[in-house]
Image 1 (cartoon, one colour):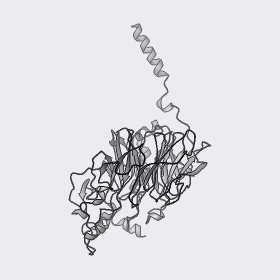
Image 2 (image 1 turned 60 degrees about the vertical axis):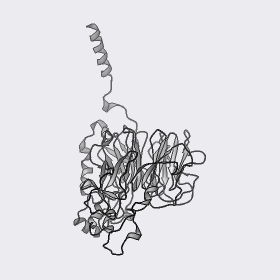
Image 3 (image 1 turned 45 degrees about the vertical axis):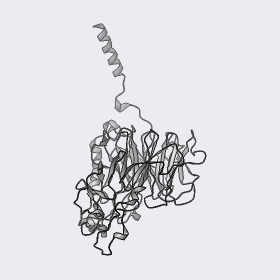
Image 4 (image 1 turned 180 degrees about the vertical axis):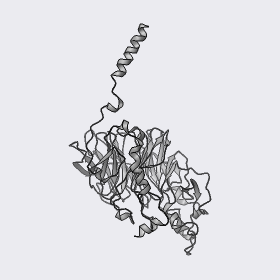
Length: 471
């Protein structure tokens, strides 16, 4: 009896000394900008501009000491990387340095990742890495060449990367066409169906993801393993540690109406096919160029170039976990593992949508950062608007008029989310400075309203939005 009373007293003392979760000390964060850097965010979130313009940029990475590395989108010359450091602890970069002793070879030079003490980055044709030194902003020495694409530069040539923590490095080899079109098989009749090459020869070296050894130098596709195929164009790719699996967001094809006007309308052109959110396992075939994914029918259908008419289902291929609106161009994918944001964001997916370019005569759309809640390695709800305000003028008739285009995502050591812009090289840092334990669904209401009302986010109406876009 005395022993039980003693144990009970110990438990009371122990738990009575614990701070409530809402009172646990959190890292000191810099203040958000008064206008959140122009962004619209869920209630409780704020943002600040880290740097206003370092030049057209692609992906970015944040080191465990807060240093930021950005891949520039430049077509030639050297010093295609930028390093940022905040020495005043106000969240703003006061040190900005260009570096990179390698030749740039095109504006689709994309990747920037930190992995096992190395800074990995890619041009259009080559994957490099440099060793990071403690407290040193710029890596020392010349970049090591890990992988070389031996073929000429082509469209959709971004080399995005992911690492499986078992020595594997995954590299995208995207296809330059919509549906492996065969010009020799296409009639001059404007109402004729454009035909596709059968079988598609591009699939020998493109339209898929290859696995390489992250520590072997000067590899080519001959040394790599084709991990998955039938994937048109992936720029955003990430390894999900919780699920221990590879995930990616795929750009769907364009021009269904142009290639088969008897089966597809201009409205179909604007809303089909879905951009695919994929969990990728070795040996998967996602069906490009023979198929596309219809987000309204929730089916993979045969492409018109291969006998499809908008109704014929294509079976035997891998389906996505979910789809996003057509032509939004998902260009980065990040699984959030930090503790700064409310618990509902833990292990969920953030997706940066670069925005559409070819939805005429309807308004261009996308240009946001979305969030997808996850549970047990799969989406547990529909996508949400997480960050908006990049686009500027809306409705947007043409991509060139967009003020900013969200491109890259990175997580800071304190759980902040960083977003890069491809037009000017602006970088935002998104923070949560309220009590995360008090977060509720009410904080999402304003963003859900934007999803329903803003012309660059909602699904276009075949009558009203056509008129809006032409005004």
